[in-house]
Length: 210
Image (cartoon, rainbow, N blue to C red):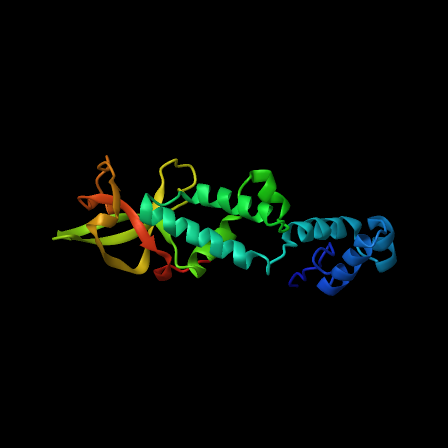
């Protein structure tokens, strides 16, 4: 006879609406245990939901002015001197948010950085640039024909970085946009067959932000 699977736990079976109502009761001043008993919800499940909700509860509308101010500041620095690093931009984002008295997730203050996903989406909305490595195909006059690659997590058990190509990521850029030349890769093969590598600004409009 075929075996019939029988579920042994009730994890994930509580409706989201029930958890939301229970979390509101706890926020009103009641204890987690009493609310969980009354609504027949596992108290550990309710506690986890409340903890995650506290992290995600962020005032979204108040970020519009801060994001515009941040974008203008980054563009001015890029025109006058050089672009800020992503980490420095996230630190500056948190400073602006705190200065404007906008609520932030707890992990922002713990890490002293704005969220990485929020920052990437902010850059995409305001047409900012991001530092990417370019493998040069050809040099013609004052233009560089390059193919952009993105660093991703290395293979399990290997400390070497892995790079992945995006679709439709070839572009010609002025030589003036090149920030610095990278050293030649030691290992020949794969993406290392290209002769030259440069670091330069790349517009995020051609990238899919996930």
